[in-house]
Amino acid sequence: MSAYRKADFTFSYFSTQNIEIDLIIERPGKPLLFVEIKSSESVKPRELNALASIVTDIKGAEGICISKEPQKRRYKNILVMPMARDIAEIGL
Image (cartoon, rainbow, N blue to C red; front, side, top):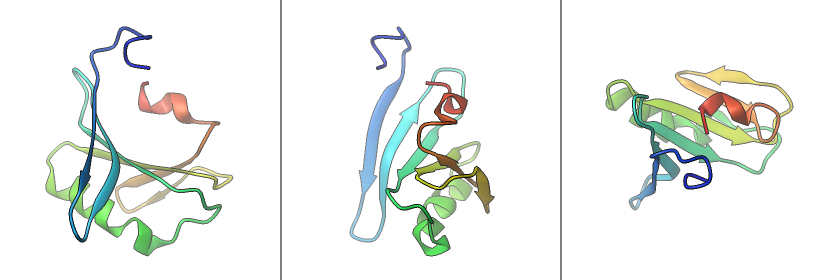
């Protein structure tokens, strides 16, 4: 997707024994974006705590969770959003 849109994005992931971030997107001129992808229709707070912590620890970072939830909502500093409907908001 990055090559198709001619964007200079860098994609990676992060994993330790205790924490896993599904996708990290470096976007020129924009904050570092941490993405968690969940297949459930109801994401539990405990599933977002690690992501919220990392976003807090890294100054200026943003965090989103893409899921099957029907409505967009916020949990702490994380935007939880429907998988297909609002994907354009992350700037991809």
